Length: 67
Image (cartoon, helix red, strand yellow):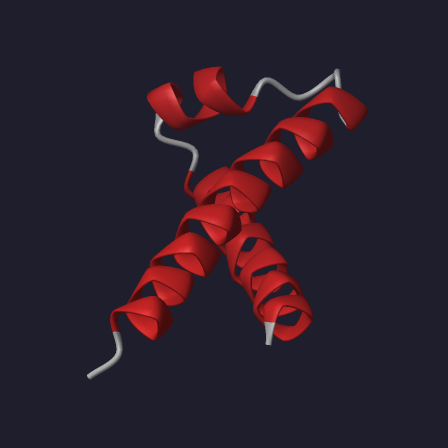
């Protein structure tokens, strides 16, 4: 077991999380008419499904680029 490979994997995981967060914030800024946090607090299921799909799509893109 090589520790350098484990360290690189943790680095890629952390980088993926940071990129996921930045991508969500960028999308949030690009759609100013929709307040996702308020809609989620109201229990809007459609918004939660949309955000989940957005996270999955961003994760696939980031995973492909980090591979």
